[in-house]
Structure formats: structure tokens, C-alpha cells
Image (cartoon, one colour):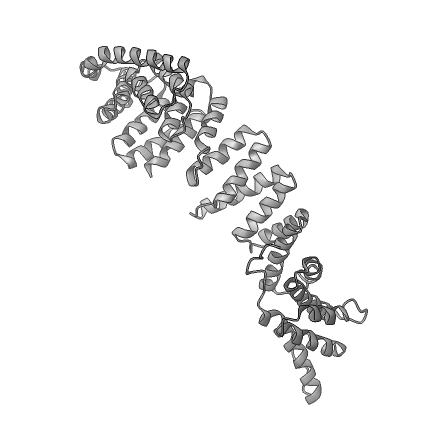
Length: 415
């Protein structure tokens, strides 16, 4: 059996000894004929077996403790407080004897008792949640977990076991909803969600074949605890849902985050950059792919070589004229020309000039795709070392959902 968390083993002094003390107090009060103590007391007939159970528990004689308590459990003359005390101690002794089924059955009788004050009831529910989970009674585990959450007494272990229990019942929608709520609550409180919660969130979405849900979950994972597969998976889903207009933007993000692994990805990105009139970017992409050794088959290697040759030829003709183009664009009233110049500077790694050109373009207006231009301005600012400005620019990107997601993910690097 797996070792249970320490919080399940409620201190002997707070369960057994306090209950036994109640019995002893009642006995003493009878002997001295003193006024009845305040609060509930056990019945006189239970004093001897409870004292014996207490003594056995002190000596860690769990079987004897269980035997003494079973001998008086279920008697029709037992008052409600008798039932509470018997089963509370019985649950503890059963747990220590590794009789988990008996511990569950016993504590289930007292967890909602009027005599179980708030802290005690919460401790019992956490124990029952863990024990039910270990017994693979996931429905019961969910019930105890949800009650703790409802009462505001749930901690990280409660949330994670409850989400896992939903997941293991194939209630992926429920697991997604609870994990999303938990992650959001931690973010709102300025805390970092645990890795397991993020993994359960994304896995529950994947099980439902819900791309939108999976994207939301993977974005959270990328923010707080990225795995090796996080960025490739995000890239794939953004390609699937983002449309052709955002393909190069997604490639740029994935490349920056180390999410490109296959030669085909590098060649496709380079081709898109050439189509956009950005030979400098195409050249750097292919050179990076070659350095990483991703062009592993002849056809792919040949394509990469052709693309590299083309990019170098175009760059050789384009780059020397760029400063003159920039000077001419500064005198025009059309912001679209400035944006194109900014994109060219960005592709060659001249980030300061790229920022200047983009900012002039926004000042003039008439930009064909202002949100994409804003995204690229943020990238240029980030690469130029202006993280605060980049963060503000990324936050200002609106446009479609994919473009906003790309901007949010770029913003992770601006922190």
C-alpha cells in the first residue's frame, strides 16, 4: 500500500486521547457527583470499552482497538454522540491497521455529524478523499473533493485529486472545467498553477478532441511550465485553426521558442518569407536549420540548398538599397511603405531601425494590416532590448484570436 500523506494521520492526541478524555471526564463526574460537564458526553455503558480502545491505541494495538469499538458499534441504545465518538476513533485505528475500507465506512458516518467542527470535518473529508481515490472509488472521491471546494477548505492536493478522479471516470468535460477554474483562480491570486493541474487541463481537452480548449490549456502550459512537446503542439494547433494569413507569424513564434524540429518546417517557413519579400529572414531560417542538422533526407536538403541560394541572391540585391528605401519612405505619407521597410529591417536583424520604421508607419496610418504590423513592432522592440515597450505593444494587439494568442505568447519573453 502506498504511504498516505501525513495529513490523513490525524494526531492521536486530537482523536483518540481527546475522545478518551471525554469518557474519563464523564466517569469522574459520576464518581464525584459533580455537575454534568458542558457539551455532549458518551453514554455510561461505553465508558469501559472506550477506555480499553483508548489504551489499545496508545499501545498501537490496532486490532484490539478495532475489536473493542466494533463490540459497541451499532447498538440501538447508542446516542448520536456515541456513534460519532465510536466511529471517529474506529476510523483512525482502522487506518493505522491498513484496513482502509473500514476507515472509509467509519469516517463516512461522522464527517457530516453535528459534532464534527469545521477543522475536524475538513480533515476527515480530505482523508476520505484520499482513501476513496486509493480505493478507486472515484465518484466518492469527487463528492468529497467538491464538498471541500464548496466549503472553501480545499488546498492544492484536494483540487488535484478531485480533477484526477473526474479524469479517471472519463468525465473529461468535468476535469477540464475544474482544472480551468482552479488555474484561473490561482492566476487571479497572483500564484503559479502547479504543473499537474496544467497537464490535466490539456489532457482533458485533448481527450475531447477540442482544439480550442487544447489551445487554451497549452497556452497556460507554455506560460508556466512548458514541456518539450508544448511548442510543437501549440504550433500544430495554431496552424490548424489560424488560417493561412497567420502561418508565418506562427512559424516565427515557434522558431523563437524552439518549437521547430523538422526540416520541412524550416523550408516551409523560408518559402513563406521569400514570398513576403523577406530574403534576409529566409536565409537565416535555412542557415539555422542546417546548423541544427534537420535536413536529413536528400530531397529536403536539396530544397534547403536551393532556397538558401535564392535567399542569398535576393538579399544581396535588396539589403544594400534598404537604407535608401528607408530615407525615401520617411518622406512619404503612406504608413504601409514604412511598415514594409520595418519588416525588411527586422528580417535582417536591424532591430533599432525596424522599430523606428514601424513607429513612423503607425504615425502616418493607412496600414493594410495594422495588427500584424503591431505584432512585428513588438518583436522588433523585444529584440532591441525594450522589454517594457514590447510588452505594451503585444498587449495592444487585437485582430483575430490566433494573432492575439501569438502576441500573448511573445509577451512571455518580455517579462
